[in-house]
Length: 445
Image (tube, rainbow, N blue to C red; front, side, top):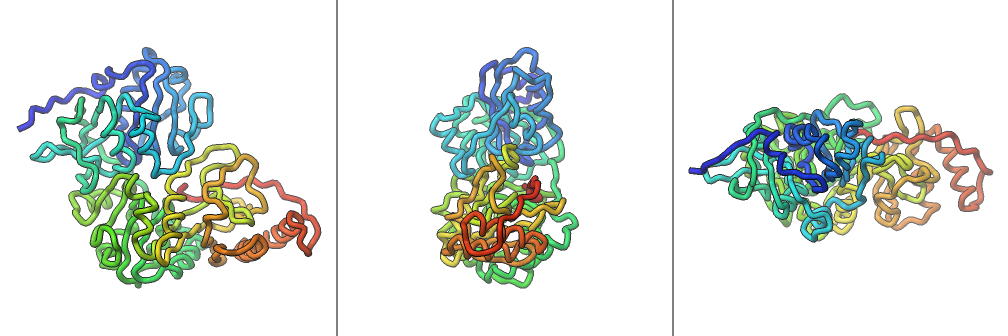
């Protein structure tokens, strides 16, 4: 019915010229062959700007050969772009995930060429953006030229990701497995305790949003006795499958998308990709919708579970940087923390181990110099570590400090108390020297 012409990746990327701005589809949908074909042209290209959120797969953006040819302008820094984003050949745009579509729709970052990966066309000629609709929906709606890697292993997903082959300028057939991530690896005792503490806060009928990493997976493992949970989350991983299959997550109590689990992108195992394939119960949606606080707040008892690199005693959350090193990005944390706080009975939760792998406290008197504040102290509510969970909402600095010190590692509590009293001239112990402190990122960030 459709006269489809497929070309090689090398031929497809010849349309890209020096000075172009090129979007790279992200997460499990990263079109690795197209990116590598583009990098293969580095000698003939200058100042091509590469725009993306998280990218996955066997890619190297920090190769000295690319210098002068490509500039990585990251909207969310990930492992493959971390070095270059912190170098002269890259940079980072601080922005809420929900607002990234505006960059493309309002011509703030107009895209010349989009490199995307899609599922095979159906009998009507429709492909889908598969595992990652997120910001890619707004890109394919606005990009001047679309190059699509058609991969029969890409799940066909329901939601906002449909794109007709007639709207794709260049097609490349390349079958390959999607990159897999295991978030349910063996958790340490601290993470297991955090999972239990957070799960205990979540009531029946809650709507879940879960961030990335081992902690959300542990929370899910402790929700098997709950009833009538919903799912409205920017990312879906394997941990939700048993709860959906058992009926614990049935989406009956949501006010929007009743009976449907909503996400914006999917990362996990092949089992997860098979689970979402042509599954009408799962809808993969535009990030501008999923992360819109006006949408989030309409569902009842939204429990938004996210992590952090460090938190100071006033409640400021750093979740994207280690000092001046840009480690990840703002992402959707603030979208959901604020959206959950506006939801009836909502639970905005920051969950993290009390210490780094080297024993340094993540609860600190001051954020490290150069660290970014992702969630402000005006937005933070619940904070959980392996030592318990506290609600900072409506509490003053003294009360917040007391609560946070109470869930810090016991070895650091005396130091934290002394530093708080010194900073605010409260009655208490004298000054204490500040130890050498190098925070580490939370698992999965």
